[in-house]
Amino acid sequence: DGSGLARLGYGTSGKVLTTKGSGQNPTWETASGGKVLQYVSTNDNNEYSNNPGTTPTAVQGTNADLTITPSSTASRILVNYSWGAITFWDNSALGYGVLRYNVGGGSFGDVTPVGANTVAGSQRMHFGINLPTSSHQVQAINYSFIHHPNTTSAVKYRPYFWGEASNCQLYINRSQRNNSTDYSAVMMAYAIELE
Image (tube, rainbow, N blue to C red):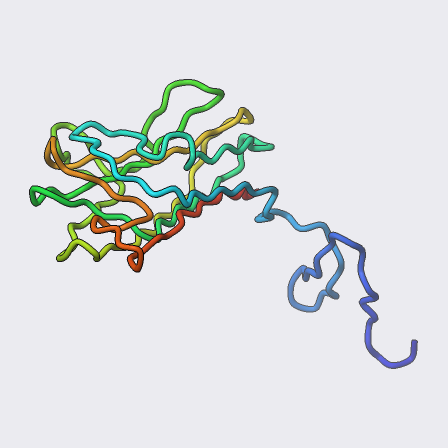
């Protein structure tokens, strides 16, 4: 237009501005990857007091499940679980957690990698749950990972918990004391499909 500048225009919906390198004019093109394709989320404000013993147990049942169906076998799934209040109590027994998944309703297996050490028998964990110093104190846990399920079938994620001792007690979304002024928290989780 006589200004000496090349006009880029307004582009097209869904396009990104790219350059081919030094001395080349930028152009509008389709993005080549890294898009968020879909997400699912869940939350659970139920309060749990449960003795899972030394065997990994889905203490929250299906309330913490995340199910997502990837649109491509090349997709990665970003998964995040956040427990606002979680603790083990009694008998000086630490707690453990592992994230498991199944494909198309099959059996659950551990998301890999997991920790190198085995605890409470032959189990390996993704995260640990500490003991509180008093009955009204709790901790929060946030756990994220990127998973490549390599499938276009439904993938279900579910947390499992267990402890060092057979009589340890797990509390989720509450403290052991559970007074009316104590923590009453919410677990939130999401899964995002990444191109």
